Amino acid sequence: MNIKDKLTIRFVLVFAAVWLVASIAIYYSSSEFRKEEFYERLVARANAAAKLLIEVEEVDAQLLQKIESANPVKLPGEKITIYNYNNQELFSSDTQDSLRVDSVLLDKIRLEKSLNWRQGDVEVIGILYEDQFDRFVVVAGAKDLYGLRKLQNLRNILIIVFFISLIIIGMAARLYAGKALQPISEVISEVNEIEITNLGKRVAEGNGKDEIAKLGITFNLMLTRLQNAFEIQKSFITNASHELRTPLTSMLSLVDVTLLRKRNEKFYEDTLVSLKEDIHGLSELTSKLLLLARVDSFREDIKPVRTDTILWQAIAEVSKSYRNPIRVSISDDISDDDSFTIIGHEQLLKSAFTNLIENACKFSDGKEVTVNILNKGHKLQFGIIDQGIGIAPEDLKKLGQPFFRGQNTNQFPGSGIGINLVKKIIDIHQGSLDITSSIGSGSVFFLEFPLLKI
Image 1 (tube, one colour):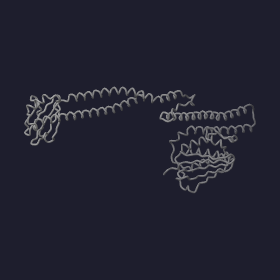
Image 2 (image 1 turned 30 degrees about the vertical axis):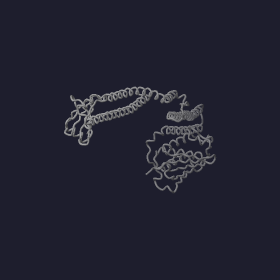
Image 3 (image 1 turned 90 degrees about the vertical axis):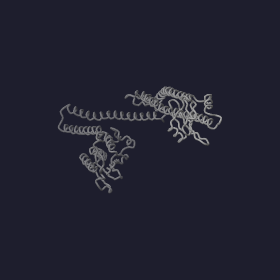
Image 4 (image 1 turned 60 degrees about the vertical axis):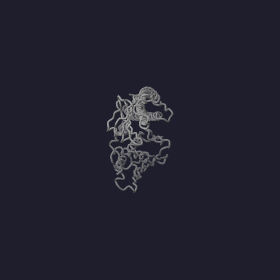
């Protein structure tokens, strides 16, 4: 069932419930009013008959019966019976079919002074009539033909109007639901037109204020993220293909040149050394690409780890390839193991430290590299400081994009994916990376990680 039908059904059901409750309330109040009005008329007729019989000396039971039989305003099927204090019948407007009650009921009427009930389709009321010397019970009954007919007519009207209203409301609700959902249908239609070849297309955002507009805005933002991700992926694949093809082409060309003719031993040795360097670079690039592709899969393997141990492992590994002196400075407020413990993944953290320290050593040309470890309250900060060539301000904004390298790094080997890998690793650990640098003055990479909460 689509949303339009659901909205229509729910709207009709709500209206039906409200209308049904209102109709019941109207019918019930009208029924009570009819009953109250009818019994008031019965009481008036009973009091009038009792007053004539008891208070007017010239009127006896026979005369009162004639008066009642000739009364043009009496109620349909009206019957009046009067009893004295001995429960003897003094008067009955219909001697053949009088309203006969037993002594128990008469005593109850005297006790409550007024009591009403039904005898078949006749509504009856008994009242206590008191004069100066005696007490009488007057029982009056009649059929409220006109009131019941009006009530029945009201019930029929309410039922007919109820069903007619349901039909009208159902049609109106469907039209309203269709109009209300039309913007969504338009969004669906526009979304169906978006394909991989036109990811730059956006859906209409309407007035920019209501929920439909917010849906369009949210969807456009998602499309923007998808487009950026697709372009990054496309650029990544293109650059990765180029980076992989370049060393392979170089290696193949070097082998082809070597095989053109016989060479001396020194030439072959130099060729093998060059091939080894290219293979090493290709292996390093492949490892980084594989780690970059798998980095998100390590999220489930994080646990409490000691960052100082990982840092020393990274320094030891970098020191195998670079001769730069690496100095580690730890602030005085870090005094126990808990100050180094975070929730993380050992392999990923080691890769992040290794990449940053390796870059610092590579671009510092043998100069000292410093690693400062500071306690920042609930966070642990690592500051990796080099004395290298620095980074231009315009390059800082792009640093971290896959395969991006600064304009002044052409003479240094590298693939340009290290910082991108570091950023992803830091994001997984809910940390942050800040970089300050200027051309010729070196760079500082600040890594912050939330400490383990004990």
